[in-house]
Length: 374
Image 1 (cartoon, helix red, strand yellow):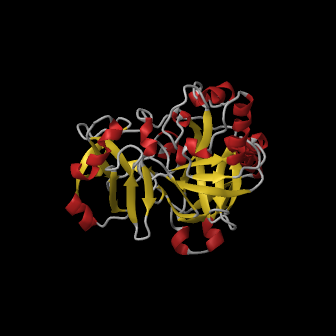
Image 2 (cartoon, rainbow, N blue to C red):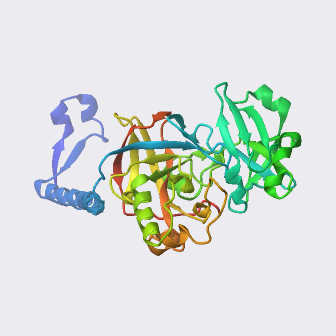
């Protein structure tokens, strides 16, 4: 390689450097060598540039594959189910927490012998357990249709002192997993045993141990750690009036009675611009300014709970399960169950109201159900 030589002492004209063997001479590449270095630099930078270009193209392709944003809609109803699998209540306004709507699935019944959770799946009569939230913030639970003695009243937001005096913190089980819960006394729930075939049961309030989301809500998919109370897998279930209306048309064509959205036990019900466009929701913004955002985790793959009429506790042998199975097996992650509603995780907390605007801010074709039960 050719170099151009310059005596450093002539440049600086100092005796100290002139007498130094270390700095006696600096050598710089000639003009021909500069071309070599320029070429080397280009070869180093080119792969990085090509990689960035390919990444940009991929983003563009992904955006082109996204479905268009559905038209904005609004909340038509808000439903809270304080005790898992029991009757819900409709409210005009509620507090949205990152764990779900305040008071939703905050309690559950368990088998007193095992502390395992009890649900409508095994006992459809649980829908006859009605719940009211009184003006003085009490949870009033009653089931007069089954037993006049089946009633209890406890604080809806108990203090630590009240819990310490009236309950015991124990390990309970839900979907094969352990968590903690404040277990109420046997005396308090004695009147409800008739609903459970004579089984001794206990009422349980979710304890302080976080019940971390799994499945589609796992941090590796969601990008953050979230937890919930006693819902099956996600803090919020959103349902659509327009999708229900489309389903009811099919039921009527088969000679069946139309059903209500309560069959599917959603928390937030939206009017919906078109039936089933919720399948592609990815993120939602609630409020005129979109101040409350929710991530849409997955479609809700349904069991046969919607076959239970909540006002009577009677379970239909086929419907609406059979009709849903004929055209709503739309999720590759759970091919043998139909889907209705979308599972969501709130990012922020605040108050939601009936009539509040709901905007879909992002969409995807890539929803695939991942079981949160294993």
